[in-house]
Image (cartoon, rainbow over all chains, first blue to last red; front, top):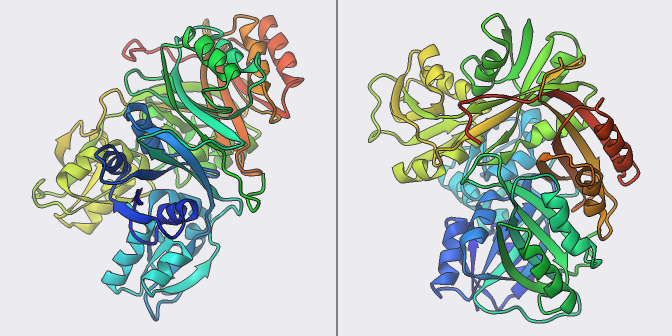
Length: 276
Length: 276
């Protein structure tokens, strides 16, 4: 089964693919998040895995924007514990470093650590790609931030482990596909809606869930690009679109929103190692 | 009047300081957003100006985190139209460029433009600082992204104007101070609250406002760093903490939240050029 992800071999997204689909999956690397959507839409891959939210840095804007416009469905979710390593070429030392290369989110998650070493942060499109870049550069003053797995894949040296500023660092990924998700005992549904700007609009919208005892597991507001300070709301809740109570809530919600898009219902992630 | 801001002379934050306080203000540059808070807390500056939200890229994490822990009050707001320029040394050309240096938010706002030129994006802590860095480097293959004003201050060449991917690009800044804000005909209040995780918690919290016809102008959820997938809500609404209806709403809200912090009431930004 071909599964598209953003980044290169050794990236956290690829780790999420393997964690979810197992060793039989064939991870297909793509340069950007929109390219992951396009691969699945075009049938080059059967599914895609995209990061949507990090427990420290918040939402991944590009993923939310693509979810708004795609015809694909959300068919699953994955929570992955993120632990970053500082990775250099052979002979590199912490004292000798000047620059550090990684994805902007990884740089942000290690902001205090990078500042403590006085390093210049340099953006790269991918964490594992940054390791490959540093390897090719062969410069002992430049390091990358990525997973231990990426260091192993590129036979590079780990200079420090667990360098993220906050320990409880998780990234949530969504699995996107062309069909419906498999059924499971515990399920979630993801939706996007836009509200008219008047007092009580969000309150009334959330009432569609609260009145029926439906538990929201996440709410995130994102600016719409059409109008400054107008928001799209990304909401996840417990339940499946075919549940009677969810159908009622959604038809109620539809009367209160300017736009309502159901992204899909899917099995909730169950991981005993993920403390909540 | 000394006003602290993040960045260097020529940054968008400094432009916001001048727009709000006029030419008499003395802008005091600080390296980081937490350092702006510290300057005002320590009395080195009478006020500070911090970016909180961009209409394209969303919230500024570091500002939200500092607002959660500061003893300062929010005493004002500023909306600034952001238009980016590509800025190089004398003799630089679009065709000859290889790398582009700027603040991660500015790089993100010009993502498509940078990709179209095939440039490598490099993070810098400040837009204007990136211009100074490129000037010192004196390399025709490296450009910065910053304001036209920054190009002027450092006598650099503007290679392209209005390079942001989306035209309706505004950044909202908050003014922070040690005292209370001046009164005005139209006012806003900013608060932060944390909710217990159970069905209807957010709905009930927003009911405190909706039932009293109080208009929310913004809501943003941010992960708390204490627990994965627990959120702080940053909410702005119309009205002043001394209004009877607002006092009632806040005391109602306090019974429904784990944490409630009132950041302050302040004059709403009125700018005829800011289309809403």
